[in-house]
Image (cartoon, rainbow, N blue to C red):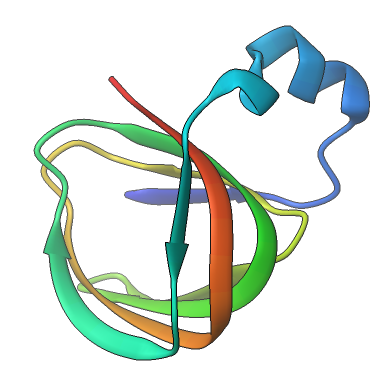
Length: 89
């Protein structure tokens, strides 16, 4: 799997990973191509997104913890404005 989505991540895991200390990225409703030069982990505070990959479409949003694999090329469709914590590497 090039995109892993974990629903209902626990507060304990959020604290353990240090998610709240990660930078925040925000994006309005839009569509764009993206390539991951390195692995990204992120936690969605707000929004809804569909990511199109060669493995199919994946939808996720508020409350989801998502990992994007290094080397992934995809298309983002932001359906509701996004606010997320993120970490590369």
